[in-house]
Image (cartoon, rainbow, N blue to C red; front, side, top):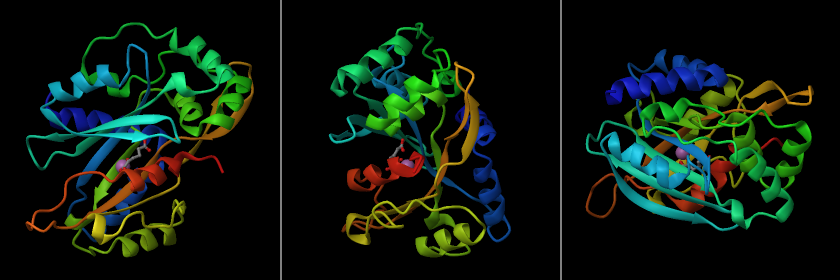
Length: 265
Ligand code: OOG
Ligand code: NI
């Protein structure tokens, strides 16, 4: 699969459950000739056939190199970022929930679902493969949600792209992140306010903002139907380092707040 095919499949899968993303992209296409992506992000469960270590090899097979690793102690997550040999191709951020760090009760619930994951082929399609387990009961979802919004999100959504990110540097209409967020909000989309609308500063060479995830109606295995957060859209503006190169990394303190774009509050 070519890298272009990979990203068109991924975008199609994304907008099925994130209609806001296509609407926001069209909004910018009214004033900008193109909307370029900075990165995409995925979430997964540790100690499973689709864990971070497994997904890492799939990402590498697409022409990426490991860029960096991250730890989110409070959220019980670890993550890696990847950068492509072709600079025009989006970066990739993959995180995993460290299941063994959760309470015994949550671990037991998640084990019942993760034990259903069958070995999968190391192929790019895994990134739109969805749930590898049965739909959870609402009880299981609600119990896990109290301890980890990430775990609850992943239990319902499965392995799919969590967000695409607009490269604000390459917009023609503005290069100010605040302008972008104001425009998105004025069009009726909620902005993630956790830690402030703009995460990061020019000093850390990366400013980011995001929408709050769309809500989709899902039927839990016990027949209850509820609206739950699906995926969101992000906007990133990068700054030059002292050598005059545009910073290409991620910033853990920013990421910590971006994760909250799928909060149900
Ligand atoms: C990923 C959050 C981190 C970034 O740009 O720092 C991130 C997630 O919500 O799964 O995307
Ligand atoms: Ni991101």
